[in-house]
Image (tube, rainbow, N blue to C red; front, side):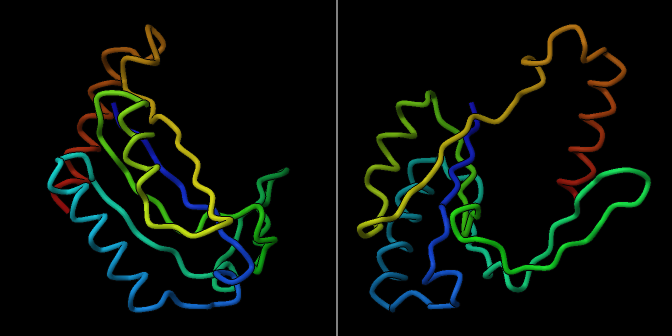
Length: 137
């Protein structure tokens, strides 16, 4: 099972306050443990929303809305993990080196089997082909 772990933004992150050397070292050590355990597929931090944009789809023409956005609506980083269970991810993420007030959200990623009969063999083949092509790039 794959899980996306999303780190919630806060006012400091949105203001562009960078982590300290000690915080970076602690996170690097934690990420190394995740990699050694074989569950980390990816993980990245994100720039503040002042550098971002949203696209709102309504009617014929999508509207672009430039940041910044309210910090309580944002993700500032993520991990993509592969684990045996949600509980395994919870156990790992409880050890993440965050201070007071930090929040993370954990969501399971859909797998092809989750879609049932609606994902026809043709659609499944097309999805697998796209994933293989993306992996080669």
